[in-house]
Image (tube, rainbow, N blue to C red; front, side):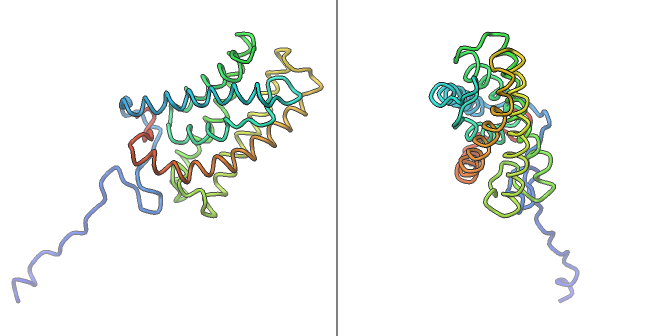
Length: 230
C-alpha cells in the first residue's frame, strides 16, 4: 500500500516535436530554412512545374479571352494554388516558370514581356502559400488546406487562396499586358473582370477539391515541403 502511494505518477506522453495539436491537421509547416529537399520532393516539384506550365499554355491557346494573354478558362490556376500550398518555397519556382513559359514565351510573347509577366504568379501562387504557412495554424487550421470543406477552413480558403491572390493578380497581370503593348489600354477592365471571375470560380471549385482529396495523399507519401525548401 505504502509502495503504491510513493510510486511516482506516470507522466503523460508528449507529442513528437514535429507534430502539432491534432486539430491543426498533424505535421508542422513553416517557412524556415532547415535544409535541402529530398529527391522525392524535387521530383514532386518538377512534376508540378511541368503540369502547371503545360496547362497554362493550353489554357491561353485553347480558350483565349478577347484580351490577348488572358484565358477565359484558365484551368491551370486550379492546380497551381494547391501546388503552391503543398510545396512551400518552391511555389515561387513553380509560379514563375509556369507563367513565364506556359502563359508567356510558349504562347508567343516576346522574351522581355514574358520575363515580366512571369512575376504575376509570384503573387497568385506565392501569396496563398505564405498566408497558409503563417496564418492557418494560428487559427487552428491545416497549413495545407486539408480542412477546406469545414466552415472556417473554406472561409479562410476563399479569402486567402481565391479572392486576394486572383484580384491582385488580375490587376497586376493586365497592367503588364497594357504597359508592354500586348493588350490595348481600353481592354484593361475587361481583362481584369474576366480574369477575376473565371480564376475565382476555378480556384474555388477545383482548388478546394484537390486540397481536400489529394492533399492528404501527397502528405502521406512525404512529398509536401514542410519548411521553406524541404
